Amino acid sequence: MNDDILLDVRHLTHVFPLSKKIAVKALDDLSFQIRRGEIFGLVGESGSGKSTAARCIMNLYRPAAGEIIYKGVNICDPAQFRTHRKMLQTTRQLIFQDSSSSLDQRMKVCDIVAEPLKIHRIRPARGSLRAEAEFQLRYVGLDAGFLDKYPSELSGGQRQRVAIARALSMEPELLVADEPIASLDVSIQAQIVNLFRHLQQEHGFSFLFIAHDLAMVEFLCDRVGVMYHGRLVEAAPAKELFSSPVHPYTQALLSAIPIPDPRLERARQIRQFTEDPENFQGVLTEVSPEHYVLMREGEHHG
Image (cartoon, rainbow, N blue to C red; front, side, top):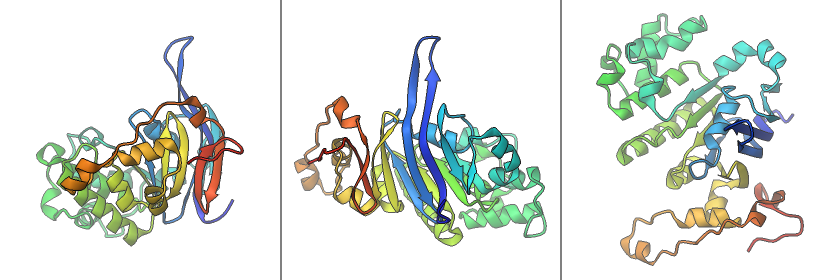
Protein backbone atom coordinates (compact mmCIF):
# COMPACT_ATOMS: atom_id res chain seq x y z
CA MET A 1 0.00 0.00 0.00
CA ASN A 2 1.15 3.53 -0.74
CA ASP A 3 2.75 4.97 2.45
CA ASP A 4 0.97 8.27 1.74
CA ILE A 5 -2.44 6.59 2.24
CA LEU A 6 -3.43 6.41 5.91
CA LEU A 7 -6.94 4.99 5.44
CA ASP A 8 -8.13 2.85 2.53
CA VAL A 9 -11.83 1.89 2.46
CA ARG A 10 -12.41 -0.86 -0.10
CA HIS A 11 -15.81 -2.02 -1.38
CA LEU A 12 -17.50 -1.53 1.99
CA THR A 13 -21.05 -2.85 2.38
CA HIS A 14 -23.16 -2.71 5.52
CA VAL A 15 -26.70 -3.98 6.02
CA PHE A 16 -29.18 -3.28 8.83
CA PRO A 17 -31.74 -6.09 9.22
CA LEU A 18 -35.22 -4.72 9.96
CA SER A 19 -36.84 -8.15 10.24
CA LYS A 20 -36.11 -11.74 9.23
CA LYS A 21 -36.97 -10.96 5.62
CA ILE A 22 -36.30 -7.22 5.23
CA ALA A 23 -32.95 -5.45 5.43
CA VAL A 24 -31.69 -1.98 4.53
CA LYS A 25 -28.38 -1.64 2.71
CA ALA A 26 -26.79 1.39 4.41
CA LEU A 27 -23.47 1.14 2.54
CA ASP A 28 -23.19 -0.24 -0.98
CA ASP A 29 -19.69 -0.96 -2.36
CA LEU A 30 -18.18 2.19 -0.80
CA SER A 31 -14.52 2.91 -1.60
CA PHE A 32 -12.33 5.95 -0.83
CA GLN A 33 -8.90 6.80 0.54
CA ILE A 34 -7.60 9.41 2.97
CA ARG A 35 -3.99 10.53 2.72
CA ARG A 36 -1.77 11.49 5.62
CA GLY A 37 -2.39 15.11 6.67
CA GLU A 38 -5.51 15.45 4.49
CA ILE A 39 -9.00 16.70 5.35
CA PHE A 40 -11.52 14.54 3.49
CA GLY A 41 -15.18 15.60 3.58
CA LEU A 42 -18.07 13.18 3.23
CA VAL A 43 -21.39 14.82 2.34
CA GLY A 44 -24.90 13.76 1.48
CA GLU A 45 -28.45 13.92 2.74
CA SER A 46 -29.58 12.34 6.01
CA GLY A 47 -29.71 8.58 5.50
CA SER A 48 -27.03 8.53 2.80
CA GLY A 49 -24.73 6.34 4.92
CA LYS A 50 -22.16 8.90 6.11
CA SER A 51 -22.45 8.09 9.82
CA THR A 52 -22.55 4.35 9.14
CA ALA A 53 -19.26 4.69 7.26
CA ALA A 54 -17.73 6.54 10.23
CA ARG A 55 -18.86 3.86 12.65
CA CYS A 56 -17.43 1.09 10.47
CA ILE A 57 -14.11 2.96 10.25
CA MET A 58 -14.04 3.22 14.06
CA ASN A 59 -14.98 -0.49 14.53
CA LEU A 60 -18.32 0.39 16.14
CA TYR A 61 -20.06 -1.58 13.37
CA ARG A 62 -18.75 -4.70 11.64
CA PRO A 63 -19.41 -4.32 7.89
CA ALA A 64 -21.11 -7.09 5.94
CA ALA A 65 -18.41 -7.04 3.24
CA GLY A 66 -15.31 -5.15 2.17
CA GLU A 67 -12.09 -4.08 3.86
CA ILE A 68 -10.87 -1.07 5.81
CA ILE A 69 -7.08 -0.76 5.76
CA TYR A 70 -5.69 1.63 8.38
CA LYS A 71 -1.89 2.01 8.59
CA GLY A 72 -1.57 -1.29 6.70
CA VAL A 73 -3.88 -3.16 9.12
CA ASN A 74 -7.18 -4.65 7.94
CA ILE A 75 -9.31 -3.53 10.88
CA CYS A 76 -12.24 -5.69 9.71
CA ASP A 77 -10.17 -8.82 10.39
CA PRO A 78 -10.72 -9.75 14.09
CA ALA A 79 -7.25 -11.33 14.38
CA GLN A 80 -5.49 -8.25 12.97
CA PHE A 81 -7.64 -5.98 15.14
CA ARG A 82 -6.70 -7.89 18.31
CA THR A 83 -3.00 -7.81 17.43
CA HIS A 84 -3.02 -4.03 16.87
CA ARG A 85 -5.74 -3.10 19.40
CA LYS A 86 -3.70 -0.56 21.41
CA MET A 87 -2.43 1.25 18.28
CA LEU A 88 -5.96 1.37 16.82
CA GLN A 89 -7.51 2.66 20.04
CA THR A 90 -4.94 5.41 20.59
CA THR A 91 -4.27 6.71 17.06
CA ARG A 92 -7.92 6.98 15.93
CA GLN A 93 -10.35 9.32 17.68
CA LEU A 94 -14.04 10.03 17.06
CA ILE A 95 -15.99 13.23 17.76
CA PHE A 96 -19.76 12.80 17.84
CA GLN A 97 -22.47 15.22 16.77
CA ASP A 98 -24.09 15.47 20.20
CA SER A 99 -21.47 16.47 22.75
CA SER A 100 -23.99 16.42 25.61
CA SER A 101 -24.51 12.65 25.27
CA SER A 102 -20.86 11.82 24.45
CA LEU A 103 -19.57 13.51 27.64
CA ASP A 104 -20.21 11.89 31.04
CA GLN A 105 -22.42 14.40 32.87
CA ARG A 106 -21.09 13.23 36.28
CA MET A 107 -17.44 13.94 35.43
CA LYS A 108 -15.63 17.25 35.64
CA VAL A 109 -14.09 18.64 32.45
CA CYS A 110 -10.58 17.97 33.81
CA ASP A 111 -11.34 14.23 34.20
CA ILE A 112 -13.13 14.02 30.84
CA VAL A 113 -10.15 15.43 28.90
CA ALA A 114 -7.61 13.29 30.79
CA GLU A 115 -9.69 10.08 30.66
CA PRO A 116 -8.12 8.56 27.50
CA LEU A 117 -4.62 9.00 28.94
CA LYS A 118 -5.74 7.32 32.17
CA ILE A 119 -7.43 4.41 30.38
CA HIS A 120 -4.41 3.68 28.18
CA ARG A 121 -1.90 4.38 30.99
CA ILE A 122 -0.10 7.01 28.95
CA ARG A 123 2.24 9.23 30.96
CA PRO A 124 1.14 12.88 30.57
CA ALA A 125 3.72 14.94 28.65
CA ARG A 126 3.17 17.82 31.08
CA GLY A 127 3.71 15.91 34.32
CA SER A 128 0.19 15.47 35.66
CA LEU A 129 -3.20 14.66 34.21
CA ARG A 130 -4.56 18.00 35.40
CA ALA A 131 -1.70 19.93 33.76
CA GLU A 132 -2.26 17.96 30.55
CA ALA A 133 -6.01 18.67 30.61
CA GLU A 134 -5.34 22.39 31.17
CA PHE A 135 -2.92 22.46 28.23
CA GLN A 136 -5.40 20.70 25.91
CA LEU A 137 -8.23 23.04 26.96
CA ARG A 138 -6.14 26.13 26.26
CA TYR A 139 -5.36 24.63 22.86
CA VAL A 140 -9.06 24.62 21.98
CA GLY A 141 -9.69 28.09 23.38
CA LEU A 142 -10.91 27.34 26.94
CA ASP A 143 -9.05 28.57 30.02
CA ALA A 144 -8.24 26.74 33.27
CA GLY A 145 -11.47 28.01 34.82
CA PHE A 146 -13.34 25.26 32.93
CA LEU A 147 -11.36 22.37 34.50
CA ASP A 148 -13.70 21.94 37.48
CA LYS A 149 -16.97 22.52 35.65
CA TYR A 150 -19.47 19.83 34.65
CA PRO A 151 -20.78 19.46 31.06
CA SER A 152 -24.22 20.74 32.15
CA GLU A 153 -22.60 24.09 33.06
CA LEU A 154 -21.25 24.60 29.54
CA SER A 155 -22.77 25.87 26.30
CA GLY A 156 -23.02 23.58 23.26
CA GLY A 157 -19.94 25.13 21.67
CA GLN A 158 -17.92 24.80 24.88
CA ARG A 159 -18.94 21.15 25.26
CA GLN A 160 -17.85 20.46 21.69
CA ARG A 161 -14.47 22.10 22.43
CA VAL A 162 -14.10 19.79 25.44
CA ALA A 163 -14.87 16.78 23.20
CA ILE A 164 -12.22 18.00 20.71
CA ALA A 165 -9.68 18.51 23.53
CA ARG A 166 -10.32 14.95 24.76
CA ALA A 167 -9.77 13.52 21.27
CA LEU A 168 -6.58 15.56 20.73
CA SER A 169 -5.10 14.53 24.09
CA MET A 170 -4.20 11.23 22.39
CA GLU A 171 -2.40 13.06 19.54
CA PRO A 172 -4.31 10.97 16.97
CA GLU A 173 -3.21 10.28 13.42
CA LEU A 174 -6.85 10.03 12.28
CA LEU A 175 -9.67 12.18 13.61
CA VAL A 176 -13.21 11.25 12.54
CA ALA A 177 -15.82 13.95 13.18
CA ASP A 178 -19.42 12.85 12.59
CA GLU A 179 -21.58 15.95 12.00
CA PRO A 180 -19.65 17.79 14.77
CA ILE A 181 -21.29 21.18 14.14
CA ALA A 182 -24.85 20.16 13.22
CA SER A 183 -26.34 20.85 16.67
CA LEU A 184 -24.60 24.23 17.15
CA ASP A 185 -25.69 27.80 16.37
CA VAL A 186 -24.41 29.14 13.05
CA SER A 187 -21.93 31.59 14.67
CA ILE A 188 -20.52 28.79 16.86
CA GLN A 189 -20.30 26.47 13.83
CA ALA A 190 -17.91 28.89 12.14
CA GLN A 191 -15.75 29.06 15.29
CA ILE A 192 -15.52 25.27 15.56
CA VAL A 193 -14.68 24.84 11.86
CA ASN A 194 -11.96 27.50 12.14
CA LEU A 195 -10.67 25.66 15.22
CA PHE A 196 -10.56 22.36 13.30
CA ARG A 197 -8.62 24.01 10.51
CA HIS A 198 -6.11 25.55 12.93
CA LEU A 199 -5.65 22.31 14.89
CA GLN A 200 -5.20 20.23 11.74
CA GLN A 201 -2.50 22.62 10.48
CA GLU A 202 -0.75 22.46 13.88
CA HIS A 203 -0.99 18.70 14.40
CA GLY A 204 -1.03 17.47 10.80
CA PHE A 205 -3.50 14.66 11.54
CA SER A 206 -5.70 13.17 8.83
CA PHE A 207 -9.32 14.21 9.21
CA LEU A 208 -12.58 12.65 8.05
CA PHE A 209 -15.15 15.45 8.30
CA ILE A 210 -18.76 14.31 7.89
CA ALA A 211 -21.37 17.02 7.37
CA HIS A 212 -24.28 18.16 5.27
CA ASP A 213 -23.40 21.87 5.50
CA LEU A 214 -21.78 22.21 2.09
CA ALA A 215 -20.41 25.72 2.64
CA MET A 216 -18.43 24.52 5.67
CA VAL A 217 -17.16 21.50 3.73
CA GLU A 218 -15.99 23.71 0.86
CA PHE A 219 -14.13 25.97 3.32
CA LEU A 220 -12.47 23.19 5.35
CA CYS A 221 -11.82 20.17 3.14
CA ASP A 222 -9.08 19.26 0.66
CA ARG A 223 -11.15 16.58 -1.08
CA VAL A 224 -14.85 15.75 -0.91
CA GLY A 225 -16.89 12.60 -1.50
CA VAL A 226 -20.64 12.79 -2.21
CA MET A 227 -22.82 9.91 -0.96
CA TYR A 228 -26.32 8.91 -2.00
CA HIS A 229 -28.15 5.85 -0.64
CA GLY A 230 -24.94 4.23 0.56
CA ARG A 231 -23.00 4.77 -2.66
CA LEU A 232 -20.25 7.24 -3.46
CA VAL A 233 -21.45 9.05 -6.60
CA GLU A 234 -18.62 11.57 -6.95
CA ALA A 235 -15.27 12.38 -5.31
CA ALA A 236 -12.91 15.21 -6.27
CA PRO A 237 -10.66 17.96 -4.89
CA ALA A 238 -12.98 20.42 -3.10
CA LYS A 239 -12.41 23.35 -5.47
CA GLU A 240 -13.08 21.24 -8.54
CA LEU A 241 -16.15 19.52 -7.08
CA PHE A 242 -17.79 22.83 -6.17
CA SER A 243 -16.90 24.56 -9.45
CA SER A 244 -17.49 21.65 -11.86
CA PRO A 245 -19.82 18.98 -10.42
CA VAL A 246 -20.48 16.19 -12.90
CA HIS A 247 -22.97 13.71 -11.42
CA PRO A 248 -26.63 14.90 -11.61
CA TYR A 249 -27.10 14.34 -7.87
CA THR A 250 -24.03 16.43 -6.99
CA GLN A 251 -25.23 19.19 -9.32
CA ALA A 252 -28.65 19.24 -7.62
CA LEU A 253 -27.08 19.17 -4.13
CA LEU A 254 -24.74 22.09 -4.85
CA SER A 255 -27.44 24.15 -6.56
CA ALA A 256 -29.33 24.18 -3.25
CA ILE A 257 -26.56 26.04 -1.37
CA PRO A 258 -27.96 29.46 -0.31
CA ILE A 259 -26.20 32.58 -1.69
CA PRO A 260 -25.59 35.45 0.81
CA ASP A 261 -26.41 38.17 -1.77
CA PRO A 262 -30.26 38.59 -1.77
CA ARG A 263 -30.42 39.55 -5.47
CA LEU A 264 -28.37 36.54 -6.54
CA GLU A 265 -30.31 34.32 -4.12
CA ARG A 266 -33.63 35.35 -5.73
CA ALA A 267 -32.28 34.52 -9.18
CA ARG A 268 -30.76 31.19 -8.10
CA GLN A 269 -31.95 28.17 -10.04
CA ILE A 270 -32.24 24.99 -7.98
CA ARG A 271 -31.73 21.91 -10.15
CA GLN A 272 -34.36 19.25 -9.72
CA PHE A 273 -33.04 15.75 -9.19
CA THR A 274 -35.10 12.80 -10.38
CA GLU A 275 -34.16 9.51 -8.81
CA ASP A 276 -33.32 7.58 -11.97
CA PRO A 277 -31.82 4.16 -11.03
CA GLU A 278 -29.57 4.44 -14.08
CA ASN A 279 -27.72 7.34 -12.41
CA PHE A 280 -26.52 4.92 -9.73
CA GLN A 281 -25.21 2.12 -11.90
CA GLY A 282 -21.62 1.48 -12.94
CA VAL A 283 -18.26 2.22 -11.32
CA LEU A 284 -16.32 5.28 -10.19
CA THR A 285 -14.56 6.57 -13.29
CA GLU A 286 -11.79 9.17 -13.36
CA VAL A 287 -13.04 12.05 -15.55
CA SER A 288 -10.10 14.38 -14.77
CA PRO A 289 -7.11 14.04 -12.40
CA GLU A 290 -8.42 12.82 -9.02
CA HIS A 291 -12.04 13.56 -10.03
CA TYR A 292 -14.13 10.38 -9.94
CA VAL A 293 -17.78 10.04 -10.96
CA LEU A 294 -20.11 7.04 -10.75
CA MET A 295 -21.02 6.11 -14.32
CA ARG A 296 -21.50 3.17 -16.60
CA GLU A 297 -18.92 2.24 -19.19
CA GLY A 298 -19.10 4.53 -22.23
CA GLU A 299 -21.44 6.96 -20.46
CA HIS A 300 -20.89 10.73 -20.39
CA HIS A 301 -22.60 13.01 -17.87
CA GLY A 302 -23.46 16.45 -19.16
